[in-house]
Structures are given as C-alpha cells and as structure tokens.
Image (cartoon, rainbow, N blue to C red; front, side, top):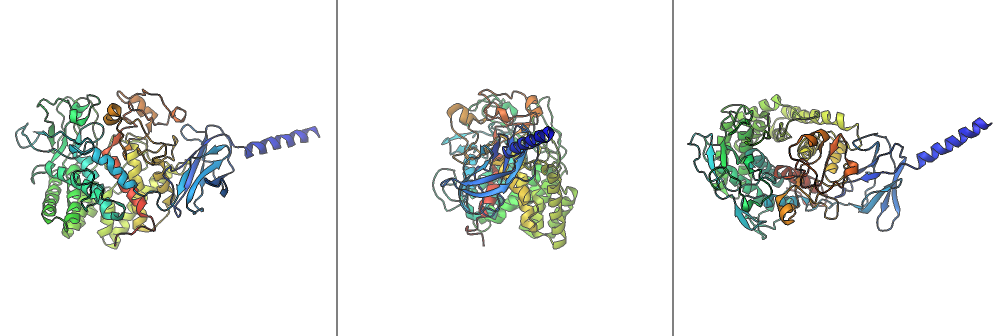
Length: 596
C-alpha cells in the first residue's frame, strides 16, 4: 500500500511540474502583426520543462481573449534549453495585446492592418544620412574631391569626378556592387509598392515636397553616382576608396584618411583581374558581377523614368546596354580591393547578376536574345549557393538572393516561368530543412551581415508566394521577417528606431552616434554572428557592458555595443533590402490603394 501511495504522490508532483512551466521569455515581432496573417511568438526558457498552453490578453481590459495550446516542444536553441512556438494566427481582432505563458509575459504589441505603415519610408532616413557629396543630415558636403583612377586604361591618378552616392556603412568606402544593388531595390520598391511611399523630402534630401516619392528621389541619387562610375561605354569602376579609410570615428565632413593625394580618394577600374595596391590581393576572375549590377539598375531606371524624364531615361538606356556588354568582356566575378587588412567583399558568383541584367534589358528593349540569355544564366545557378549552408565567406554569394529569377519569371513563357519558380522553391526548401528544427524557424547562417541574408531570404519567400500562389512557406516567411523585428533570442529589433517604443539598438558602431549622439534611425544593423566569428574578428570587443549577456551562447552572439562592428554596424545595402521588405509587408494592407 505504501508503494502505491508514493506512486500517487510522485504523479501529483509530476502533474504539478507540468502545470507550472519553468520561467522563460516570450519573443514577438515588436512592430506587430496583420489580422489575417501568420501570428506566432516564441517562448523560450533556460530550464528544462514543458509548456502546455498560453493566453492572449487584451492590454486595455486585461481580459483573456484567446487561449492556445503550445504544441510541439522544439528543445534547445542557442542559450535556451527549451522552446515552443505560440501560434495565435486564428485570432484576428485588431487591438493591443500581450501574451502570457506560465510566468512569462510578452511586451505589448499591436494587431492591425496598418502596423507596418510608414516603416519603409522610415528606412529612407538612413539612406539620406549615408549620402556622400551633399549630406542633408549634416547639412554640409563631404568627399567632393573624389577621385583619382587606378588600374584603368587612362594613366593612374587621372582625376575623375565621382562625388555623390552613399557611404557603405560607418566607414566611408563606396562600392559599386552594394550601391547598384541598393539602387535596384529602391527602384523595385517604388515600382512594386508605390502607394506606401510619401513625399516629404526634396531631391537633395532636405525637408519639402517635390511631387516625387522620396524613395524615387533616393534611387535617383544612386543612379546618378552609378552613371559617374560608368561615364562612357568602355569605362567602368568598381569602388571608391579602400580600407585606408579605417582610422577611427570621425564625421564624413572631417575625413582625414590619407590616400596620398590630398582629399582625393582612389577609384578602382573593373579589369577582371585580381587587384590590391599593397600585399593583400582579391580573387577577381572577370567583369560580369559588377557590370551586371550596373546594367540591371540602369535598365529598370529607364523603364521608370521613361515617362518622366526622357533625356535622363535615354542615358540610362545607353548605359544599360554598355554595362551589359562590359559584363561579357570577361565572364567572372569582381571582388572589392583592400590595402591594410585581408577583409574585402569576396563575391564569387556572377551569373545571377547577368541573369537579372538580361531580364531587365529584355524588359527595356523587347529583344528576345536577352530573354534567352537570362534563362541560360538562370540554369547555371538555380539556387543562390548559401541557401541551406552553415557558412560562407564575407559577401561571397552577393546579393544574397537571385533577383533575376523573379524578373525572369514575370516576362518568360509559362514553361520557363514554372522552371524558375521551382528554382526558388528548391532554395527555400533547402533552408526549411534546417529551419524547421528550431522554434524561431531560423535557417540562415550566422555569418557576418547575417541580417542582410535574413532580409533577402524573406524577400525570396515573398516573391515565391507572389509568383506561385503557394502558401506552403508562409510561416517560414513570416518567421524570417519576425526575427528582424524582435522574435529572436535577444528580443530586440534589428532596425534602429523601429518600433519607437520597442527594444532596438541604441549604441551602434557609428561615428555619428559615438561622437555626437546622432542616431542612425531606419538602419538595419549587421546582426548576430557565430560565437567563433566574433572571437576571431580583429579589433572587435565589448566596451559598455553586455545587456544581452544571459542570451549569448557558443552558437551565436549579438551585442548592442559601438565597439562590436561585427554585429552592430548599420549597412547601407542591408537597409535598402529591408526597405523593400517593409514596403512589401505594408502593401499587404487590404485597405491600401494598390497600383492599378
């Protein structure tokens, strides 16, 4: 009898343990959720245990408005020993709510059609802040003496006016590859989602209205600089300045970096051969990757400017053709050049860039030879190589997403369209095979600039859904998006200032912030990296304490500290991708007037 009594007591203890889950945290999309969309939070704990259910609570009345079961236990991830996905997609009433699971409560969040309203425009603040030449944020000009040529057919140190464009990140280097990709994303955002953008700034970035959406003004700023970097059919330049720039925090208007020619900075010509003015040399093999990016931006620009500025559009058309021809000079990839250290953008692929260029030149010219070429390139790289992988070199598979597949699928016949859509699906599936085993549905590797990959993958999921009508990966798409806005182990948004009342980086690796307290609002920071990468980076450290210390792990770290350039530096091209993604999400508002 005693034995059964002990068994009964043990059963009660076990039941009690199951009913009282261990303490934990609830991670959410801090910006909120659409009523009809996928709505999932993640509960995570540093203790073992089980979670049976959760509650959704109206923040005003404190009433429980929805109860759900926790479902599958996903187990350990990063610093956590247990995790669950809390799915409340079935609840659709707009309002302000919080989630409760055991003793854990989430921050208050919103469910509503307009939760992403103005978020894409918000990101444009950072693009304007990154302007070289005239900088509207500082109300002053910088780098107006650029630059002198290297490696070109002209004598070295020939002066060429290439002032303008955007600084790449906190450093003041300017790369054609990232600038052309950013320009393309801004143009595509305007083309695809014009209704979400406002007109609160002039062409020079200052406050005002010029009857042109701000995103289109910003895209033209990028196009204008690209035209300077491709000033004639047989001249194409890959980068402005190099890592001699890395001399510490200072404003761009007070740049003391020394390149040997006063205030001029070097401009590297696209030769298709390895380059490096010191002991470090890149592994360039050809001209196609950079030239293809130029061509696609110019071709899309022509299509959008044709009815507004015919003279400008015709120049873009000419340069779209000449840049495409430049890409055929020597098929292969062009990498950026370094001088002081072995860190450079190691882009190894190029057929994706030529695929996109060919698709856009076809859309511009209706010459079918470009359509045929686009599909030939598509077949050579059906999936962007990092998809489904655990690691990659820095910017090795840039721009992290095959944009050409999307554009080709829109103009190709039904047979080719189906093949290209399958290329997207296969790439997504390779990520899903990894993502489905953790509660955050994280399948993107934690390499340097992981947030850029995360945003790009979310866009690929969106494009696949738009092209195919298949919602199979909708939960993965939303989880990828949610991660960037707070549903991650640290519970922080990765976009500075978004949402205004949420947790977001406030100590970024930024001269503007470090020296003067100016915030880089709207910017997407680099994002979390493998713990092993953080330990290996030169000069990276934590200075002001780690507010997320209890959420770090050997797997992955993220630090909101100005001295951690590996995880907390804003990037211009990542922000441009995020602007497109936010515009796509905002555009799904059923009450928004869509493009006819």
